[in-house]
Amino acid sequence: MSAIQQLQLTQQNLQNIVIQKQQLQSQLVELNSALTELKTTEKSYRIVGKLMIATPKDKLSSELEDKREAVEVRLKNFNSQEEKLKEKIEELQKKAMDEMKK
Image 1: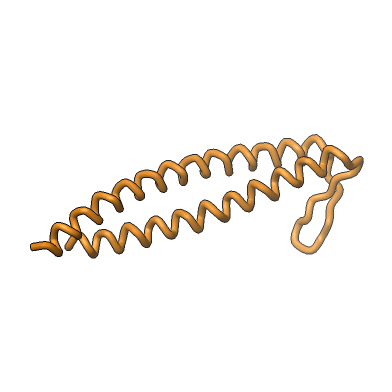
Image 2: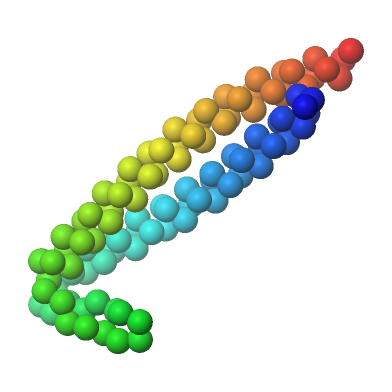
C-alpha cells in the first residue's frame, strides 16, 4: 500500500474518531446537565420505553455518575487515539511527499 493510500485511510480513521468523540462530548454535556438538574429537584423519573417511572433520586444520581465516569474514560481514550493518528498523518504526509518527488 502506498503512503498516499495509507494517508487517506488514516485520515478517514481520524475523521471517525473525531465524530465519535463529538458524540461522547455531547453525551457528557447531557449527563452533566441531568446531574445538575437532579440536584435541584425533589422527584426523579426514568424513561423506560414510552413510560416515565418514578426512581429514587440517589439511585438515579449514582447511575448517572457511573455513566459519566465511563464516558470520560472513553473520551480520554479517543483523545489519545486522535493524537496518535495526527502524528501518524504527519509522518505519512512526509512519506507521500517523498514518493511524489521520486
